[in-house]
Length: 310
Image (cartoon, rainbow, N blue to C red; front, side):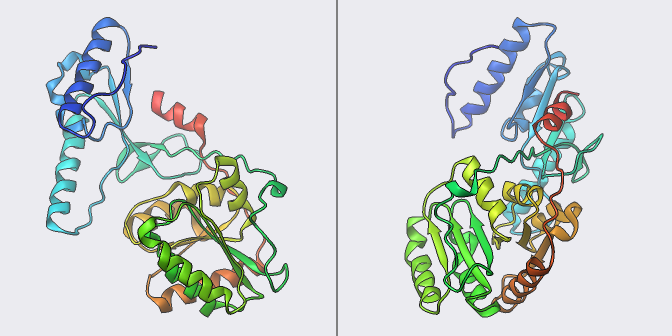
């Protein structure tokens, strides 16, 4: 292992130059070594500055490969340039992209490019340690919905709370919000929670980031994970939920639909209008009541390392 010291110039274009200098240093010092550069997105357009003999010994992992969708013109142009950089760099060095959670396979492809799977590893905490999950007021038969991770406006938590109230009665549905609530969204979230509680619903807010084992345990204990995200991005929550057999309701954005296509009916998709979200939660609650959990084996750390180094 080579200690390169503290990262420098992070946040400026000089960072990419610093990374390339470190790549040159390592490959020159170890002539027979191959090098894996993780989180290579920002460095990708500058790889041509490396000598050809160095690029042949380099594997670059790109964390976010752009879709072919449209969007704002500035965004479309950025994505097109990044796809071009991926294509050009692939001619002289090994470029892999990070795929969403997938079932184990002999080869992984994401958006038409060689990929490594986002590794899914679950280590659920004992239910007795999850003291924030209390029985619903109406009894123990309610289906638990869960929203996890940083709670910001993009997760549409207020809309989820209101849709749950419209979709089912307080004896049939309860909600866990587990994650740090952003300051600029806190008042709206608390108002929605108080409104639901005043009508008899159990809504638990654990306003902090959970440990890995707490997160896995909470995902395992709820019946439905709700990911009504406004932004078009994937999430590691999906893989954990599917691996633990928890039904997922996800927004029907391009990336979320594409990322969960291989997971079958373990994931439902919904629009973000009040009507669509209400209908989706009503259907999901009905499914969760009548269907046994069906955990699915997904590629984990071993498969990730194998795909990266093979």
